[in-house]
Image (cartoon, rainbow, N blue to C red; front, side, top):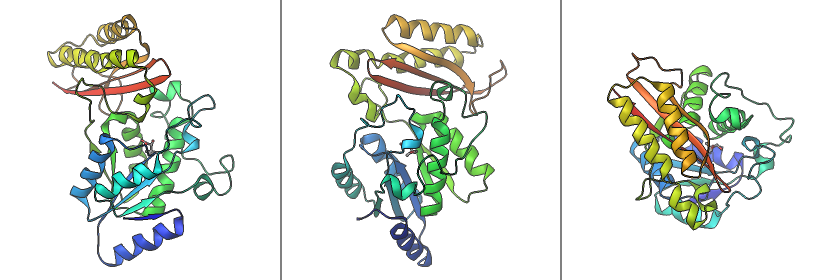
Length: 281
Ligand code: PAF
């Protein structure tokens, strides 16, 4: 695996592959890779024959009081993991390479409506930062396809809308959430949990599962299901930001909706945890 830090170097390699008729698969990440990321690389391997991964902790998607400065950065371990997973090119830019005119003067991409609901309500500007960096990365790598985890369901939905609206020729592939044995969705932020909090954290998945079972059995009391999920998380010691039943494109559900998703975000100690479960009924 080759590691490069400049836009020019990525472009050169990607163009060479394109001339050879290779199909390029791309996995954008913020690093501190775990088994969840490896599953994204494996999904990429099923769709392309050259794999690029980026590692960039994107300052634009962090709010002023969020964990940008403390976000775990482990580039050497990430490099080893990517090489072992069969990645061909690791792109490890610094902030000036991605935002050469500075964050404040950068063009920004806004995805209306989807960016201001759910997590967007609690993290203003977050999805604008995600949409902007993903657009830039897509223009740099020019992949045929890119993989995003279903754990960040709203992010996946925002990116699908972005790609459709801007007519980007990139196929978006969703990779299922990878979980610990007790159900907790894998996340770099799980390392913020104390051992006691770590015991409580799987309650999110448990309550999402309970809500999903009610929906699957035909229950359409969405407000009741959301209220029960919120109350259960609170009584377990979490501080829920939302517990919400939505259609798969994150619209409001109706009793006739067949394809649903239940999403939750909750704070636990220093960590902010998100998860979701899809339901078909
Ligand atoms: O999911 C992530 O790790 C990030 O939001 C992404 C997509 C790499 C953009 O910075």
